[in-house]
Each structure stands twice: as C-alpha cells, then as structure tokens.
Amino acid sequence: MTTVLEYGHIERIRIHYDDLDAMGIVHNARYALLLERALTAYWEERGFTFADGRPTLPDTFHAVVEFTISYRTPIRGTGDVAIHFWLDSFGRTSGGYGFRITSADGTTTHAEGRRTIVRLDPETMRPTPWTQAARDVAANLIKPALTGPEEAA
Image: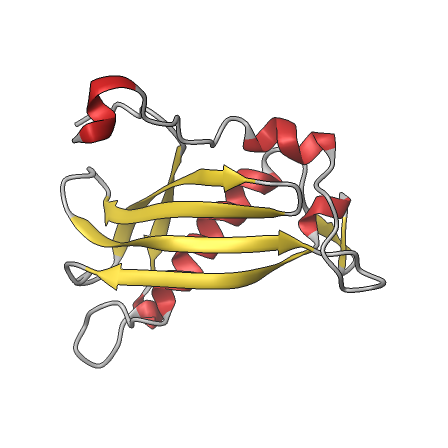
C-alpha cells in the first residue's frame, strides 16, 4: 500500500527487541525515542547534525518544552513502524510538531501527539530565533491551515 502524503514527512523506524517490555509490546517510554529517531533522521539528511559533540548548525541546539502522547493500539513486536510528523507551527524561536506513529503500511495508529521545541542560545540558554536555513527546511513540514468549508467540520 502506498501512502499519499498531504503534508509533513514519514520516516520508517525499526522496532528492536530491547524496545519491548515484559509483555512483548513497545514500552510506553520508547515512543518518544521513536519520534526522536525519526526527527533526527529527517534533519540530519538536510545538514543539521552533530559532530565532535557539537551541532554543525546552530538550530540543532534546542530543547523540548512540551511532549504529549495518546496511546491507541500497542505495537506488538519487532519490525518497522512509520512515523508521520509535521509542524503545526514554526514561530520566531519555537516549533510545534504533530505526529502519528502507525504501522508500516499506515493502516493502524499506535500513538499520536504533540512535541514543542524552543531553539536556545548555547551560551545564555535563552530562546533565540531560528536561522533562515532552519526556516527553509521547516517550510516543507508545515501543515497547511484549513480554509473554506472543511474548517467548520
């Protein structure tokens, strides 16, 4: 089955044996890690990496300020899952991701939620604006705003 993507990005992530709990399902704490792996892969492919313990571009230095998740259907075993993520907002210093963790074919939603980050100045640890390079990459993730009749639904 081919998934038609209207917005955001889908990254396939492998579930390993050590992601499972004693019941053979993915441990709840691993879901945040799965999302982090997907986001890291996306941004690394676009030049936002770490080398020698330091970010290669300044926008890589950011912190999570909010993370919410709702669990829908357990992931029961190893194999691939699909992480669909997008930006609901990308402001001056912060960004709000939405995400869904689904089966590899996209037919089963395992979890969904929101993750908000803020870019920090590494010296002051205060919020600082995103660079144009980050804005250019983020533009491809922004979920289109609803307009017209669908908005009322």
